[in-house]
Image (cartoon, rainbow, N blue to C red; front, top):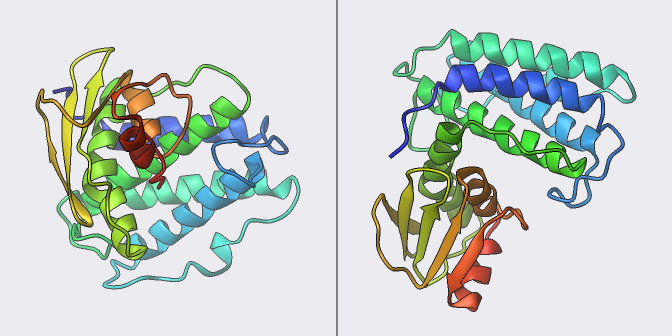
Length: 241
């Protein structure tokens, strides 16, 4: 499997690109986020960053309302606001050790959860903005592979439970075409068994690591080619995150 990514480095790289794109996508329709313009993606990420900063800074044992810091201003002022939210979030996550205890919405109550979560939340939405203006999607390959692990091992199971839904009954195999990386995903009600192995699923997706990650997040036309049961493929594609 690919190497473990530098998550804090990925957060810094991702937020730098986010801030650059914020200025060129402000009024651009973002097809991967239906109903949103670029400024809505920026506002969403800023709220997430403010919430994470509030939780970590308080070493909270439960959710924390970030207050006004999580409210995006209108107009051009959003640019200065997202700069502030990015810097505050980076300072917060850099100041907590991966094994330090803190509240999260998952079963992993550690600082490392937020290192990983902020890296992937940022990276995927940066891709959304890049795709909105038809520029080449850029993401570190090791980060994309770790994002696939997180998507199927953490994010999708949480979403299924929250919405009282079950995974498709079909199995899904993922195969990277741009380097090492395979996943066998076997549904178990509102959870999945994720194994790194070569195996035959009811449907197989082949594509670059970033394309497989974006497909896991419900994005379409990501360079992934599907083999096997088309209905099973559509069921997995339609889960979204």
